[in-house]
Amino acid sequence: DTGDMSTVHVSDDGQLFAYVRGQEVWTVRMDGTDARLVDTQTSESGKPLPAPYNALLTVSTSDHIDVVDLSAGSKTTVVTYPIIPDGYAPEVIWMPDSSGFKTVIPPPTESGQAEMLYVFPDGTVASLAKFAMVSSLDAPYYFSPDGGYVIYTEKLNDGRESLYVMDSSGANRPYGEPGESVRAYGWFPHSNSFAYGWKGTTRLFLGQVGSSPIEIDMALPENLRWVDASHYVAIRSGEFIWGDLDGATLVIDSTVTDFDILVGLIQSSNNL
View 1: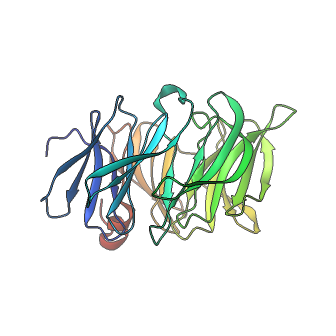
View 2: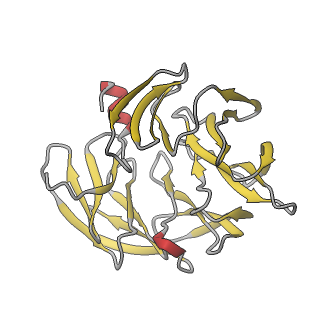
């Protein structure tokens, strides 16, 4: 109730919240009990993510990833890398059985080599693929909700950019037409479709793994998160909106500049 929480994540069973408060990472139970300070960072870049079974928690930062064992109260640094500018912290996605997680370590410069890793909680690391990618600050990458795919942007030799889809084996292929400033806008919850477009244009496309893209008749948002197969929340022209693929929108707030959503809760209650 203090109003200073950020980077909120909820466990798959909806019983544990992890969040950042300043430079501290906290967890709390759904009923408000057992609030715990579990990690303290040197900056405000930490991203906490509970494993599906709650016992483990990753904290991703601009130069390392920790695994916190909530039962034992211990912390292990499992991955380190050169510091990523502007406090960017790599995305992490846990496997459904909590046996490990995947992450992509982006290039520290505008464009360079990235690496996709599979990391076990004990710190064992397997390299799944190395590939060229635009800086995540310019064009964020996104894991599908099931961890089977990752979409990212690569700069071509002619200066244009192309969207790529990589599967869990590290095999990748370009998707759609290349152009200026290609940007992904995240996956639908069912892990088969995603949205992308070109920054500075009004064209938004629905990409589908194994199928051709379909143009969506809606204005390109500044930020977008899919709630289900047809609904999204986004920031557009300074307004926080709820919308659907048929073009209907509802303005929720005109003062929001960024947001966190708990997709599972929205799906179950249909409310924000």
